[in-house]
Length: 314
Ligand code: DGY
Image (tube, helix red, strand yellow):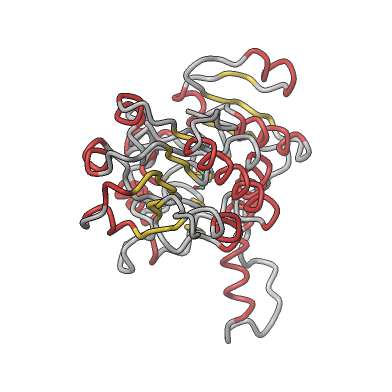
């Protein structure tokens, strides 16, 4: 006798690690299935990336008992709408902090030392003779790092900065005395941080309070030698303001692992600039971390379907 598997709405394709864990247990249906007859038979939602889960979608899917997100950021899910319908929302915090902080640091180093520009040049026809005056960057060691968002990932970034003899200041909704004690970081107002830091890194979740946090006025406070690194969400930065700022070379560089939208339209002004590095949302993209995220998110999904506690619920 064949047992019917729970129908799970997912933004397909999901990665291979997830697929392997899900295939025997659930039937994945594409996002468009929410608009089709039979939507009522969908019992869970599996998300990664950006498809929006809001009250309107949930009203179309009255059978949903579990929402699981592959990743920590749940800005695309209306948590209040889910709570109002008693649907648990699982995500995957903690297990990706190290990988995401590594990526943030890789971007910081690359922006400061003009790594991507140097790579492009070294491959090109113009590199015919070593010239010590080319591609001078900014030092990282003994520079000041400003971390905006001292959560789990921000703290991991601060740990890495210690190895580079950096002075670390941070801004957060609330000061974090435990981080100050264990990591030797100092709280600063947003204004002081932007005015002082040689590297500003964004590690805040996207929320109404952080949307557009770095706009024209904030960019204008940054030092002309400073670099801006974003491993949070694209919408934390006003990208039009950033493109203008970089075009006018008012700061040294930016390095963005996230953009809004993602991907950017292929003719977006940011893609034309040589003082910005853009990576395709690779923060947690290591084989090991993605495997852990797959296991945790699938376990959350199945737990929600079974009415059991998720490993991590919002
Ligand atoms: C996260 O975990 O939120 C990462 O950005 C991957 O989506």
